[in-house]
Length: 550
Image 1: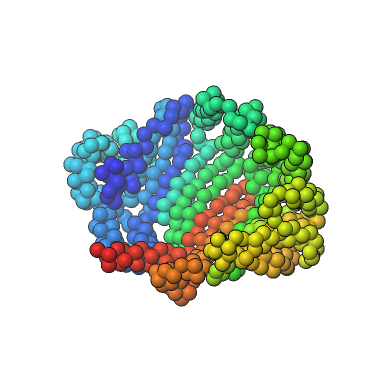
Image 2: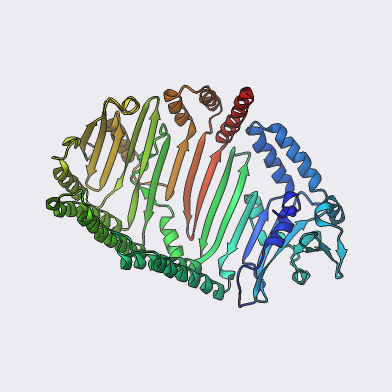
């Protein structure tokens, strides 16, 4: 790694030095194609102190803050650091900018890494030992570039290029898609197509895979990427620490150009409602809810995928040596029925469903389900599948219409768990219990000791929260019930201590959420404070155990 990366000036200098030409660009423009933002030194050091404190490493944080303040001497600690990338003269180049209160002091602090500055005229200094860079101070900003020619026509207020990034994130980057030259977009697409052709030419034929169908799907994917590159406006990646909100997060955002298909696709997800929000059980260890609306183009792509799946599944059945010849047509029929339901469901242009994993001491339960276009057809396919396999050895016991709940017909499946599988019997019971639910436009599967009760709870909650506005996607993982479950099957004192800590602190979730706006979508990965605290506690305990063994 370049030695500049080891010190506080590294984010500015290293980004400039390492931003080598990416590819040839054939249009000249001063509009940046990308910007990188680093929040103020003051804010970042405060957040480092917060993270190290809740992780139980407060001394490490104090040391980091002490050295951080010393190594950033000469930098204005209240303003952000940044970089912008522009295409010019047939190439890309990057210019980093650092707010300075005393540039001379900053360079002196890092003299071992940057060497003795050399005045090359025009108020420009040449720095560096192994590699060189050029620095020019203008209006309280030190601009750093790989060539002194790039230090002309500098912006008076470079922080304005960063927009809201410094206030929203500790570190962030934004690609301004519409400022990328058309020729470079074309080059990227051509390279993808060439790579795909080389892949298929070099890959020998695969059993059960139709090359023509596979190439058609791959081409469709390339077309989607090409359309995305032309219709996307901005792509943002940001990492933030929110001490007040007791969380750390990562955002990935995409904004579309006004009036494009991509913008309309995003707008369809804004304010979407779900009929299956009942999967978001508060006591569950893991919950998932998905809801989205597809456009005609997406539906057409799904139909192509279903067509390929139908053909390939039929070929797999014909080539399966373990399946008797007299059962192959029946197997194709059942698979065809299931694909018909899937295709009909997806052709409706609506995805709505979810799942939940419930972990209790020495107990595992799981439930999943969602919207299907024709629940009766789904039930018929399941019955035909049972008829096909009921005479097979060890086939599970299946009972249809054992009850109903909330307009959903309930069916049961059970299969004895061998006595030799003691751990599985402890967690699931002597028999694996599965409850299947089929409604007019719904399908559910629940597994566990009390699978029927869990499914009924979800059905009731779905009804109570029908038409609830939801994000297009949300995944919640709660650490406390997972650790409690683990403690019930493994008497580990380290885990027991972590459980005790979490019961007092709370805030133990990992949350992944996708939200939509009129022409944007953002996926956030959020880590709550309690999760960071537990990780820090686990590291400390692990170190203590290692020390005891030595």
